[in-house]
Image 1: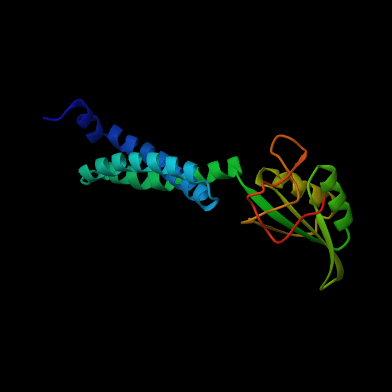
Image 2: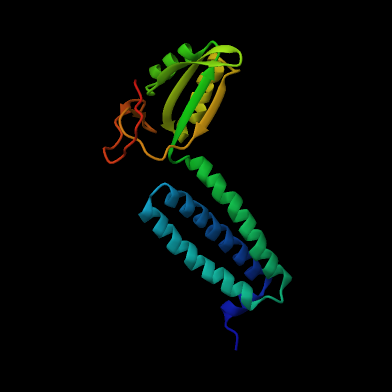
Length: 198
């Protein structure tokens, strides 16, 4: 005999619960992958545990009611929405670092000085491009600070060529913390062949 829970899961409410469970499950999985790539094993492991736990519930319920279009749609649409929500959360958290390279025809010095005034470590170089001599500015910043860096670039040279990459290994130089606009040293366990000059 079906229990009350079985009756609820067999109803349209059950399809809604599957939808919500899949959103949480896929969001956790998206964040787990991102933290795993960045070497945060414990966080990735905890997220993986909860992701698997919720996934078992969602899959088990969906398989039990494969004859219900609502349950199947709830499962599939929850997966799609979970992917969207997971990426949105990752962008909002903006965890990690970014290497910013700015190539400017005329505003490189001003951009470098403006970044230094905000506490960012900056390395300046000269180069030669299609239009002639260019100024190249390199900096490693918290991803949460990218908007501020781009505002500085737009102020001094809206036409500057900018690339953003994720560094894998770092050593030396300085970073601006999320909440404090003061340079802080990289942990000594990181290593790299390049250094920034503040």
